[in-house]
Amino acid sequence: MKPFLISSLLAFFLAFPTWAYAQEDDEDCVYAVDIEDEDMSDYNICGKNSGINKILNDLMDDSAKGSTASKEFKENVEKVAEVKVDWLKSPEALSKRRFELLQLIARECPKGFEVKGEKYAVGPNNALDLQFDYRCN
Amino acid sequence: MKKALLPLAIAAVLPMSAFADVTVYGKANVSLQSTDEGGDRITELVSNASRIGFKGKEDLGNGLKAIYKFEYETQIDDGDKSGQTFTQRNIYVGLEGGFGQVIAGKFDTPLKKAQKKVDLFNDLEGDIKSIITKSDNRTSNTVQYTTPKSWGPIQAKVAYVASEDDDVDNGVSSSVAYNDKDAGVYLAVAYDQDVEKEGADVVRAVGQFKLSSLQLGVLWEDQDAGTSSLRDGDGWVVSAKLKASKTVALKAQYGQSDIVKEDGKTWSLGMDYKLSKKTKLYGFYTHEEADNLTEDNDYAGIGIEMKF
Image 1 (spheres, rainbow over the protein chains, first blue to last red):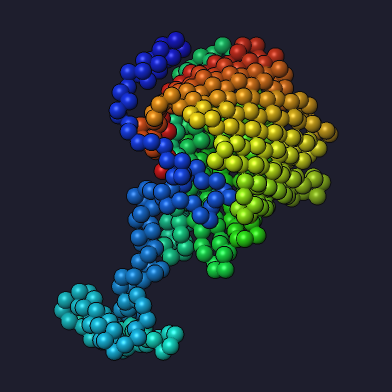
Image 2: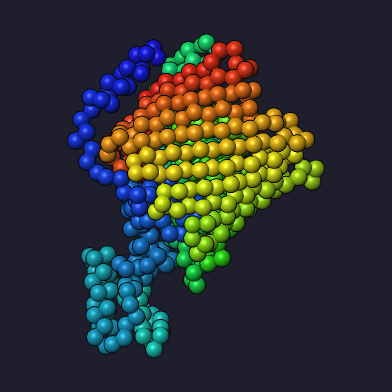
């Protein structure tokens, strides 16, 4: 058994065509599993290369950074819509944001909706952040 | 629910926003091998430290970061290691900043980490923990400090291992390493006191050198059993890895030690074939002998490893 395994091993590796693999080793790209503990705070992005990580980080970007619209249910009836990218610093930005929010709500409520209230947060230099409380018909 | 499944269940129900920055990672490594121990030969499928884990960090501002890692071994061959589907590997939480890094939990000691990649058959039958050393430890109840990256090629670690028993001395593991990646030179010395066993001291010296496509490694270790039940002895191993082409690497390793068994000797040959950056096929042959072994041990196998 042992001689057979060793000969099979040698035959396999000698016969396998080298053009099947073309990429050079990238010494700077360490896979997440190989990252040393002392490098935990700054490992190379190429270590996070699995589809699962991409999905996870996209989900976290949506929930934590709010670069796209986020919604929450309140009391199982009312909803809150907010689009948070930058603080609103001009009438035009506020108007544009109001329209964007109403569009988002419209997608959620194809049969119409009622805006129950507007809420404003105040940021640096009196910049504003807007959110709507709404209920679908 | 089995204890080992609990961490995954918890991870599944926590909202994504609970993790500031999370990476799922792991390694699947399985080999089909012929194992001859004591004259009894079997064919077996072996999961070689396959693992899955979560790690991440959170920027706390002012250069301070919180870091964490949860890593579990899983048996790809039969899903069972001592009755557990998942067993704990390195798990810790800590802080890192300009002062360095502090972590607490269960993880590899500085002496174990000092070996770098000298052991070319790590996790396989030719692993140095089989014949060369008893000090490749992953200790519980451990707090470790690592010097900051501002120290350049010099890095020191010291770990305090709490015995949680007032009748047993606490352990200390420490290491100092010099790592010049440009020159391809790595040197380290490490010391364990009361880690493997109370009363035992272990010293380890390591050298690893890269010369173009050739990597050479040497490790020497001395174990002073003191008042413990361990053996007094020393051991050493030398290794060589040659990148024969973009896809093929040839490996060889030889070592002797009295630390694990009387007059223990081991040698291994191997070949890695890269299918991609993540995946490789490999083959190996390992021979072991020692005075208390009536028959030598031989292992030959082929396997696959995939990282993610």
